[in-house]
Amino acid sequence: MHTQTPTVINPEQPLLILRGVTHSYREGDRRRLVLLGIDAEIGERSFVALLGQSGSGKSTLLNLIAGLDTADSGSIIVRGLELNGLREPDRTLFRRRHIGFVYQFFNLLPTLTVLENVALPAELNGFSAAEAQERALALLDEVGLADRHGSYPDSLSGGEQQRVALARALVHDPALILADEPTGNLDSTTGQHILDLLDHLVRKSGKTLLVATHSREVAERADAVWEIRDGKLRP
Ligand SMILES: Nc1ncnc2c1ncn2[C@@H]1O[C@H](COP(=O)(O)OP(=O)(O)OP(=O)(O)O)[C@@H](O)[C@H]1O
Image (cartoon, rainbow, N blue to C red; front, side, top):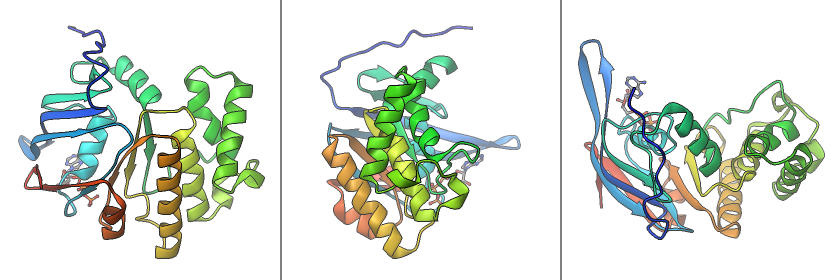
């Protein structure tokens, strides 16, 4: 099988570049076209809201940028690294190193404690167990959950689980935080709190954030708003 070595094209360019990104899903013997050519860029330290109707392709685009799926065609370049053509192990390494992901349904590992959940991405990135725990505890402190570090996710409320997930998304110091409807499973007050925290953590640590959302409140906070309509980004 032909493989491509990860190549850093130009580390000076924008953090994320999308060029003509297309994606379709197989449906029986047909293909459902979802993304028909997405072009966009995000600079360092930006907060971008990704809007679009249900089924417009927001999660699909986030998954492509995270390297969880591969585009049919086009270029996705993160910190100068072209994702298209990377072999699966290299995509996994890329994701582990550069991406923090926040999901609508938290996706914490139920058999690990809160501290273990948060420390895991740091350990997978080569931090020693002691360093990973230290980083995890510092972030748990920031999200107000240091005292719950020994608890298991099931014993936490939804908002608490999402605070743990925010800490987990940042612990390995990734370049880009991707959040897919991070407030979608929370009541509006809790969602607002999560949003405040996410905004605060991302800006404080100088990260870039791309949030797929239906919420106008999220869009109002963002530095830029992208909207997917009919498979393309509309101004
Ligand atoms: N694994 C898959 N196989 C087949 N079709 C899929 C798959 N995942 C998504 N789709 C289809 O692709 C389209 C885009 O889905 P996607 O989840 O990206 O939309 P979305 O904008 O995130 O929607 P929502 O706001 O409801 O979460 C939808 O029509 C969906 O049914």
